Image (tube, rainbow over all chains, first blue to last red; front, top):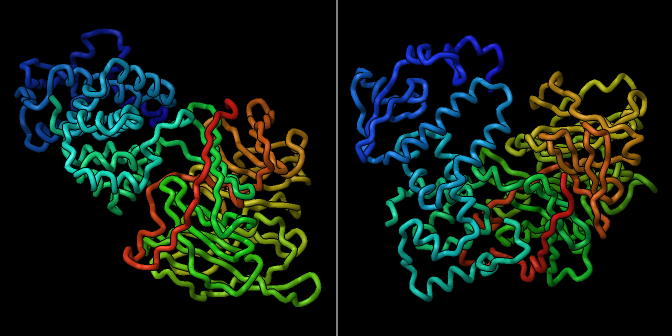
Length: 184
Length: 384
């Protein structure tokens, strides 16, 4: 968590007065699989390691539009949303509650399938903290689901034969029960 | 249409699941089944599973109770265990670490390791002299050899004189060798007059076992046993007010620091909780919380630290309560059984770690207990 003495590091804040001040920040442009183009503020773009590597390590000019063929437009919107908030909270001393509230809203309208797709994208884009958060969110959603649901969600085939299946299940039969008083 | 999810992402997701869900999902497919059993995954799960609430253990006769926080509600989960050969035994917790609990069956002089989440268990071979109980003991994990160790310091059966006997003979069990051997003697002559019966089990912090031992009337010393080098040392204490202190308890905070609960009768008339923020550094001892005597009465034994809100869960004479520093108030939990306080203010973390991980699967070495883990009940006991 940064302390208040770090305030001089950032010229522009989200709540900055004029658009003109914000234009001074460099922009990085990416294009997603569906052809959508996004302009990212440099500080947000640098949170995304795959973008950071592309521009910094290979010294590619910011005028180049970086293609992201594995990312959908709606996913990019969410990633930008999360990274922007993350950058904003870096400058705050006590952002714990705000972060929690933001995280709750962030996943609110996403189906588990979408959440999983977004997790995959966060992995591809290499945004570690977003990946961690999304993995946590997915695990929360699947922990009480049954085995068939999970297979379908992950696109996984059951390669156990009946005998093997029963054998593995018998090693922890209680784990397959859903007790009413289970709080997990 | 399900997208292809790389195995590394699946691993990250699974590593955050509670143990019960993982045991269930072993049947999803063969690759998941084998992943969940690998020791790398078990370790990864132990370190990533930070959001499954940590639990606090209390043991009372043959009922193990876990307390955990779910969204500011204190939840109680009790497990009654029945072990065939222990119809009338009394049990004591010698320590817990990485999801394993080490329990002593007092009358039978047997020790067993148990993972209450996976229900896997292992009876340790007998290794100690026939004793009614150990003077000092402990259980912990040695990072350097990736091994779990149990320590006992024997109490000689025959007292040397009427009220005192001394024992220093230290025996160490390691899971990998599945055997006991003698190590360096415990550094103190210990008297039979223990501070309290739960003080004999060690606090496991920073790869070492710790005990608070009384040396003379009001003189205290913190003894540690490094689990790697298997040698005893003294840990520096804070400078206590310049006056002799009547009573000190030792424990572990939820952040993994060594802490002391000090009876400050000479000064602020409170129980002061000291935390050693930097292990081994005397100057880093700081007072984290003070509970005034008038608020709490008899000596409270810290059970857990819920440090986000400046609250602490403690055991006061067999009853559990929370102290709220902001309001300077105590609330008692409704409970029907007397709780023996756990030897230290540790928090228990559930895991997939198996006490039989190092055993030869084919043989008689695996000595599991049957009929353990009967009757689990879970309920919310209070809102914090």
